[in-house]
Length: 418
Length: 126
Image 1 (cartoon, chains in turn orange, cyan):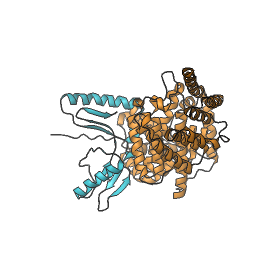
Image 2 (cartoon, each protein chain N blue to C red):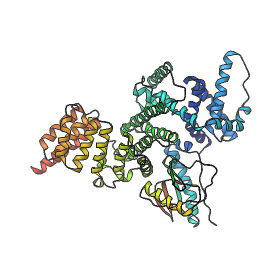
Image 3 (cartoon, rainbow over the protein chains, first blue to last red):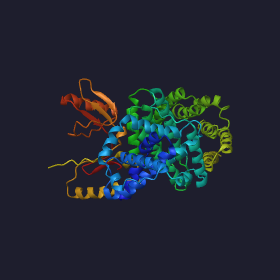
Image 4 (cartoon, rainbow over the protein chains, first blue to last red):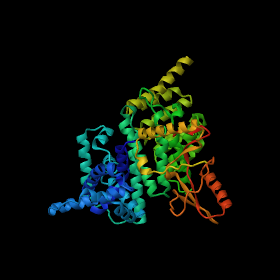
């Protein structure tokens, strides 16, 4: 790997900690970002010749802080900057910063930085864009491409989000235990939102958006390193890894979605599955299942099945029942019914979803699932009716194509019988 | 004489690599490994899952199970085992058997492997 690639990776990995610390110091997001930019420029000049510092984050914080203070002073009176050699000769000073940057400070700095991005006044799209810009350091261009909007529109979205955050009072005092737990919950939800933005991409817009999945997993691992005993963070990272492990198998050569039953399981990423399963094992020891952990456990049962027929649908149904208790929602019940149809038959699944029809009357997946249950129960005419309603509600060509595949099968079976 | 070569690096930095960068590094390392294997000098090779998946067991009358990697600097790495385990529970039980047998203080760090190659047979992907 080249020097430049190493430096870029080091800067990216130090970014949340460094901007978080600079934000605590300057108490202003723009100033913190500018100071960090300046520190990065100096790193690019300095590190190739002098070799990388032992602790890149501490180096960037110290240099960024000096640069920010200098900038403030320059506004007051003209004063010579310290020369580059002095700034680069940071070995002792770096050590001191590392000492002061004890675990707790670092943890709250990164959490605060992530937390201001998921301010409740910001709509989800702004939260995600802001976090990708500030915490992950993606360029406006990269983010714009991931969201399929123009660069100018994304620039405006991020500027607006920043202005809103600046108006809101950013909490700088060290949070108490309850507040920290609440912040962690909001931040976890935002990280999962970033993941889903990437995961919901269809194959054609693949690389720019799929990158968001990797980024969300990286942020999740960062959170978990800061909160090593939080079983829900373990669950969140496991859930993202297990879903992402299937990415190479989710689309065929034409970019059409492939249902899980039809996926080539040899394409599933073993390293991601191994890591996801290991995290679930760890989290289970805490015996405090939360929504991420339960969903991860469901994903794990799919990952463990070598063939679709090996899937433990009974256990999946139990887990969806647990998820229903934690987070009651008709969509969760619908998913539970899918497991019921596999474990105990279509009639029971149909009975389970009947009371949901009122609330899910506009939901594509409801009629897709209902059609599949009816087909399984041998009620072809009713199935066709449900599939027709599903196609009418399809939000994308891919969704419609998925239902048409079911309808084609119906036609073929009818022809075979006739 | 057999030597163990233990790999240390910043997990943050390696975690910021793109998949293509990661694969390029592994491919380049793989070429060195192939040379060693041809000379009959290569023993087991393993790549560990990130430390976020680690569990640490403090030895003692009541062994203490802690989430996260081994973080002390007063103690040094003295050896390691690679053991097939059904799950983390079994790995912890195995480590506790070893703890009782050793009778000394110290700790075990349990790290799942994402890649393992022993006797020229690879399991998993790098």
